[in-house]
Image 1: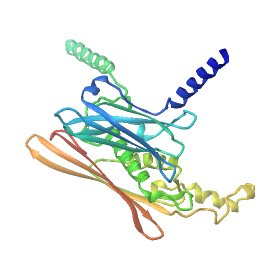
Image 2: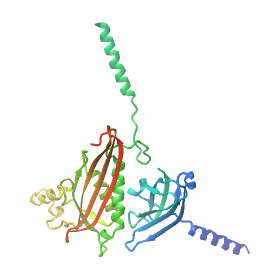
Image 3: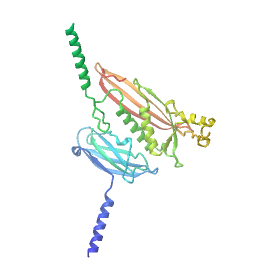
Image 4: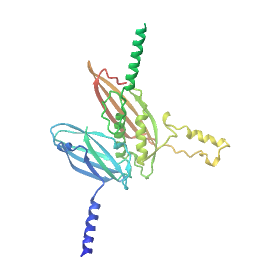
Length: 120
Length: 203
């Protein structure tokens, strides 16, 4: 009985570990959540080996808004890959409209990302 | 006369003290909330370089069919602004990113003046110098000619708005040329515009 329970617990732990992705999109300031919402995040590895990410969102307000984002890229071992895309870049969101951020990895080694969105 | 001397000395000491106390703030490039300037600063070069690199990496221009790296030469990048800009402020960032991307090797054997390392030629002259172990001297015919060339221009246009305002437009124009065919395989333009007081200097 004990053995079966242990196997089940191990299986659940492994399942959660496999699902915990190192890649994510995060708002630096929580107040941004009232203004914009992320509706979709796509990630693909192109035929040339570079990872591309596309983040879709919507501006829920009746105002044109300006934000900034930065991406931190990591290799398969979790080490940061320094890149110019780690600097803040501006992006705009028209009132009551969808917006899109499309970024390509700085090298083939970059497999995971953390995308941060902040107020301008 | 003595009073005047004392007054002058006191003023000088006060000025020295004040200048000594003037606060100098170090820029944190990761969180720079400083006011924008009418001229070009490092933030503008970061933005222009980042957009150019993203555009180049997204395009298939640097994808070698034989899965090899292209050899890239840096050609002329003209400063067509009213400012004293070393265009390396832009090009160096692009070079670093492209080199780190694994898609290109950047050659310093040939290119515009500032991008050539004279050691490539000088060290080959050592074949005449018996003080050097000849097997360690780079042989003739080992340099690799470039496949691609990066050239461009930074353009400034000033537009007067009214008595106390002006608009300054900057265009960062870059071209990647396939040297064998002479075709421009990638072109990019980044616009950075600023509006401010006409008293602000943009050169």
